[in-house]
Length: 164
Image 1 (cartoon, helix red, strand yellow):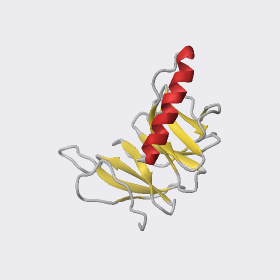
Image 2 (cartoon, one colour):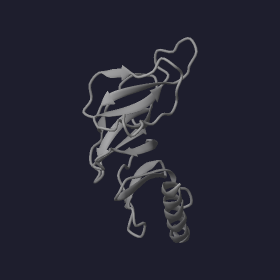
Image 3 (tube, helix red, strand yellow):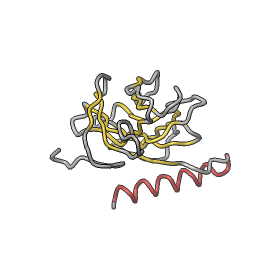
Image 4 (spheres, helix red, strand yellow):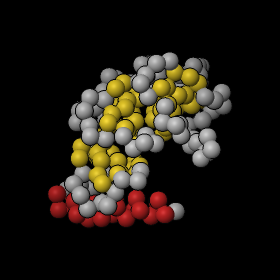
């Protein structure tokens, strides 16, 4: 409840101060102890949690980015991007730079979060669900490598409990 209230207050104050410049829609916020990340104009942005600083654009491409999630240590952001065609999972440092692509399957991969230890990004994908298309959860190491299916059940969203 408190987290939702902080995010709502930040987005409201950011949108009020940005109305003069035409900023109207900030989406998909995530926060940690020091920063808030969100989507605006199809790009990933980061601002200090106090909400009165300048937001910094982390990505800037003609692609559409979505689903930003901070790593547990707060140093990286996993996000979804269609910059290579199909939606794939990427990771970038909170200062920006060149993102690392983690998934390469032609079925879309949509970031849902991180494992508690910060070693894996988990995501939803409809891969290996033919003939019908429904999501299952997968994970991939933050540095890339083989992807592992987490569930055989249909699932589009999840979160790890504090004890894993």
